[in-house]
Length: 177
Image (cartoon, rainbow, N blue to C red; front, top):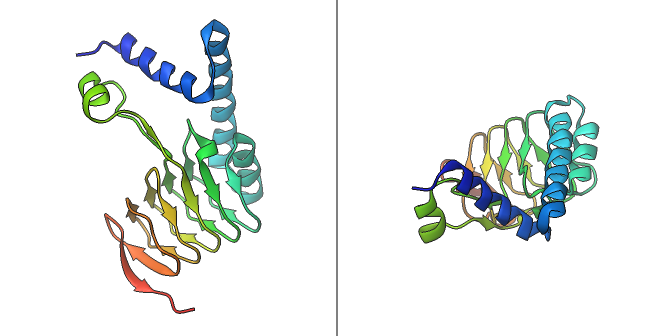
């Protein structure tokens, strides 16, 4: 078993390597970076105005296109916001979670032997509609003009012009274009 202090150090080391920080000053820079991201995400998360939400998420480093709508209570990866890209005319419903990383956290055996931290970009192409309560995992691409049904868990890429639903999300319909 790994103790709490060691697991926190391992997680901090992984984040510092990802962001290119090193040494004591690097630890300080990382803490400032995470504080800024947390503050901006907190404002975006509870804002009833999608314009404020989008401005705050862009300030965190998320790439967001034109004419998008992000509802309140959407969680966009807190640690790796720069790994999320959202195209034009995308709508994301409340209580959706989008993760660009997978991290076991404190289980040393799983973390080092079987499931190391993975950081993979999430791409939501133009025209996609993500209904409320969806979960999108790391490394996923949501196709152009595709629809993710309420409460779906997306664990595989979604092609363009498709409707998906379920846990895990599966194609239930192709949209003619």
